View 1 (tube, rainbow, N blue to C red):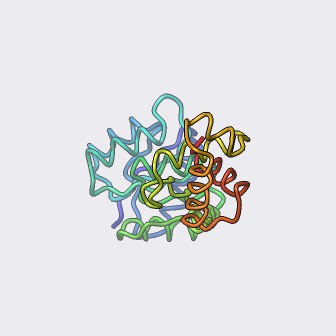
View 2: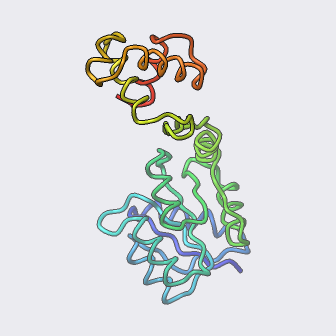
Amino acid sequence: MIRIVIADDLSMLRQGIQVILEQDSEIEVVGLAADGREAYELCAEHKPDVVLMDMRMPEYDGVYGTKMIKAGFPETKVLILTTFDDDETVAEAMESGADGYILKEMDNVKIIQAVKAVSSGINVFGPNVYSGIQKKITAPVKKAEPEFNPSEYELSSRDCEIMKLIAEGLDNKQIASKMFLAEGTVRNNISRMLDKLGLKDRTQLAVYAVKNNII
């Protein structure tokens, strides 16, 4: 026999769900709760196998009830039964330790099947909820661009400074004057950087400096 506690702030819904579940001879509803705290107290009293938990209840909601029940009675399964399937609510339920998440719009037979599955240790998600989770899991993740590390290209601090000045629009003569270098030295540094980085000209070098936060 699967022993059930139903938590919902609407009395008619609690009783309606009870009638649905008790159509199955293997299910017994041992308690009805109006919020998460009452659900926890009924768990202490009856040690149910499964709690059917609504998410949105005044004062002590489904998140509170689920956390308390999973902390105090880890063997008790919590199956969320609610009308909300938005990402935020689903995430709150999963983070609080829920063992499954289904919607009240499911037909009676599927609700009973979900209760039996959760009681046997299977995590259950309604079709809409599952598709939402699946989209998040399979969504392409934008890879962060690797942080530029001058040492990987054997660029000196002088090279980086020259690159900054190129990006600021200075020509070789201006760079040489600003850095107290010979113009030929600046030109040689630029040629060496282009070879190391595989770039064609100083314009590409300036773009590279901007993209890699060198300026």
